[in-house]
Every structure is written in C-alpha cells, then in structure tokens.
Image (cartoon, rainbow, N blue to C red):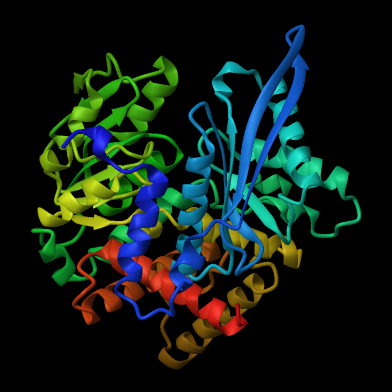
Length: 471
C-alpha cells in the first residue's frame, strides 16, 4: 500500500474517534456532535517591512466549547493549513478530556517559516496576528488560551500577552490569555519541558504494569531499554534527556531534518543537542554512524520508538517495517490511521499521542490557574511545611534520644517549591489518565488497543458533559 493511500490527518483523527465511538452506547448523533468543529476563523493581514508589504494567512479553530476556555497551541509553519489546524484542535479536545483538564480544544496556526525573519520582524507579525485574533474574541482568558507549539516559544507568548493587555487594560485576568509565558512574565516553572516530561511520566506509568509490558514482548522496567528518538526539538529533547538521565534508557539513534546518528553504545543527548545548535544538523557528528536518509532509521530495531517531530511519519508504506516493540507518540499525529491498523495487527504497542504528549496542556492548565488566582503555587504553604518537618524531627529525637541523620533531616524539613508541585501534579495527571485507559481497555473486549481506549475514555466524558447540559 502506498503512502498516497493514507488518510489525511483530520480524516485519521475522525476515523479513530468513530472507531472508539462504535464501542460505546451513545445516543444517535451525539458522536457526530462531538466530532464537529464548532468554529474556524481565517485571517489575512499585512505587515509592512523590507520596503513593502507582506501578506500573512492564519487560522484559529475552536473545536469544542463544552468546556471554556478552549486550549491549544499556536503553530508557525509554512505547511500550516486549515485542515491541519482543525485536526489538531480536535485532538486537543479529546486530550483535555482524557487527562481531566477542564478545557475545550482549539488550535491556532500561521502559515510562516519563522526562520525567514529576524526577532524584530517576528514580533511585529506576532503582535498583529494576536490583535486580529483578540479583536474577534479568538484570544481571551475566558474563551481561548493559546500556548507555544511548533515554531513558537515563550517569547511569542510574552508578545501576545502584552498585546492583549494593551487592547484590554481593564481585564484583571489579561495575563491568562496565553500560557507558556516566561516565568518572569507570570509563566510557570516547568512549562518549557512539560510535554517531554509528560512523555517520560507516561512511559514510566506503562512500565509499572508487567502485564502491559509483556504485551509488547518486553519485561522489566525502563532501565536498560533502547530508544530511537525522531526530532530533538522541545519535546524530543526533554523526553530523551529525562529518560536517559533519570530512567537509564539507552538512546541508540536520533533522527533530525538532515539525517540520523546511530550508536549501539548509546548517544549523549546533551552532546547531540549542542552539536545541532552549533552545526545546524547532525552531519559530521563524531563517535556515531551518520545516515543521510534519516527516516529509514524509524525502521531500526529498538525497544521504544519515540516520534517527536512532524505528523504522518509512520504510514502504510513503512509501518510493516517498524521493528520497535513500543511506539511512544510524543508528536501529534505521527502515525496515520492506516499505519495504526497495520501496527496493531503486528502486535506493536502504541502509546497514543492523545495521552502521551498531554504534559504541555496539563502544565498550561496549572499556569492558567496560577494566573487566574494571582498567586504563586507554594507561596502560602512552603514555610508551614518546613516548620512542621522541624517539629517532626524534634519529636523523633526527643522520643528516641538519637539525632536524625542529616539526609533524612533535609528531606523532612523541605518545603515544596512551585516546580515540585508542578511535577507532582503532572505525574499524578498522567498516572490517573493511564489508569482510566487501561481499566477501560481491560474491561471491554471490543476495545483492542490503547488508542481506542483513550479515545473512548475521552468521548464518554465529553458525551456526559453534553448530556448533563441538555445540549
């Protein structure tokens, strides 16, 4: 089967939803209501520079408003189009429901290659785009809250927040109009690495269940497992870094835009990242084998394949040659619908994107709460925890007549900081979501894989919201 036979991203998401909905007892038409995109706004605007004017086109899709605000990333890419934005918005709806984040799903995209512009030009473009969206109600702390995505970062979010505050100076919650801001601009610590950290926590949760690991033809924990990572951007870099440093995963290959590097002994993620930043690619990286046709390395043997780059990387054309035991989808839509069916038939375990890369929206939710409540997490409780720990130590020493060892003393008197609470909340969210997925998967014979189970869990929650509202 050729790659041209595969469904588009939007078609694939909708077919996966339909497949999951068939396993549920829903009222007629409700699945169609859940699937439908509520609103799409297309905007064209001009920015004057380089001795003339340049026209830019962008989209904002609000997929579901059963919960408000809607939430989704803002993507800058020359390949952005309306269908992709709608697909990503739909995926965000299901993702938020699955991990119990009370947002609807949205996505914003601007058809632009950010590498073609300097920082000053990008700021002017971003501010104009934000103004166009905000004036039509497509950016607001209460209606739609964008976050960084491909091609954007905390820098762009700070520009958008400032633009919104200037437009609506009397909105006390204006700073909550976007998330993923720099910590110095009311952002939250831990947001930059949140999606990659969520991938790590999701894989940890999967490996906590020996029966699930056995289905993948593996045994034991993460330590010593081999992994191939496609894409060393924000998500892939942090996922690979944490899995290597904290869980003992051996990164045997890294795939980037200009090729791939392989080493059976394992690659140092930090060293590879530094090399890419210095050289602009992987070619010439020392102490590893370089392969020009990088995507061919997706088919190399490993325990865990982590596609963390663009969508549509595993298709019907190459799915039959994927040798990884587990495909851990760190990117949005890396596996087409047809490839998903092929991998399922071959017994490959897929940990789906709708679950595994939800770390970003979970921590964005924490940032939004922080902004709405106007208080830093941990501010009121940290010293209280420290004092309580000191009293515990005094009680132990008074009772036993012996001093508490210094290492234990430090742990008992430690008061949680914001980053500790963010990581704890992210870990808890990923754990609870996976428990719901595997519970439904194990209880229902007609749910044969984790993706269908994840979609089914999300659909049930969204359906319940619609039925309770009487819509």
